[in-house]
Amino acid sequence: MEKLRSYLFVLMAIFCVPLFCTSCGDEEDGNESGGSDSKDKKSLDLYIEYVDAQKFYDDYKSYSGVKLLINTSDNNGGILYKSESLPIYHNILEGEFYIQDEQWCQDLRKMANNSTDVCLFFYGETSSAYVNKVASLASAVGFEKENIRIYSKGVGNLSQIWENDPYGPFVEYTEADTFYETYMSYKGTKALIDTREKSMFEAGHLSGAVNIPADIYNTADDNAQWSQDLLAAYPTNTCLFFYGTTSFQMTKAVAGRASKLGYGKANSRIYSKGYDALKSVWK
Image 1 (cartoon, rainbow, N blue to C red):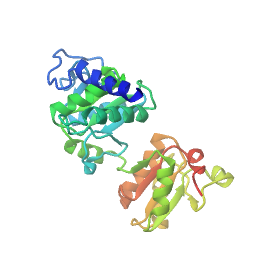
Image 2 (tube, rainbow, N blue to C red; image 1 turned 135 degrees about the horizontal axis):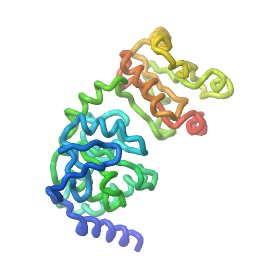
Image 3 (cartoon, one colour; image 1 turned 90 degrees about the vertical axis):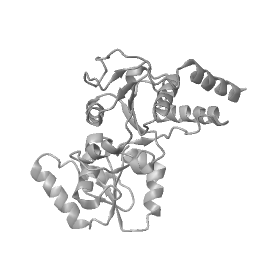
Image 4 (cartoon, rainbow, N blue to C red; image 1 turned 45 degrees about the horizontal axis):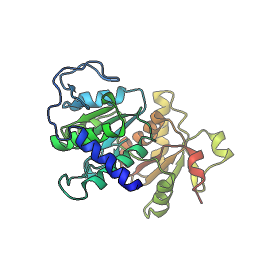
């Protein structure tokens, strides 16, 4: 019975919302939270659409509330940093359509911690059918138009803009088990780096970690010294696993700067939920 109710929910979402509508409204909407007036933000019934990559990037970066950047394509090579992956299923007319869409909705709820107050920035698709499908399912979950924002021109132009960010791209982990398992199974040269201040590190840290505090980020000279210390300790072919802080800006400052120093995205990895959330799984 529970499964039947779930199927009926998705069925209603599909047929009660114009899934494949490619033109759901024409009036301009200039009051989007976190954004700016633009012809590239079309006033559609379900979502705010972007066709200009720079405006999508600027609105994402400037949005001060809780937000998620979500790739809906199955092209893993096109994932931007600080991005979640939630591919939209490309079998619109196949028999498992409703079951798979139900799972997508469940995954989106989990990703947003069961809150609809999160602003969703989607990218990855170029087909109007799939763009509208993403918007329809997000709307069915309970998200309002102002929190459903979609860049509808794929990934290409976005990748270049994200790469030109002052901080480089990095790999972020939000699940403690995944970070632990990845670190333990990594066969190449690696280092586990605790970025908290020295007193906190001495009070308790993960086995095998070394302390390179990130709280020295006060001046350009401090930043230069931190970079020099990191390069002196580890060649750029070392895979760096950072942890210690829950601040997104500090996460960028640590992993992003390491990426720009030459370690690259693949070797600049960070667990972003802090030491306390990580220590319970460390053995």
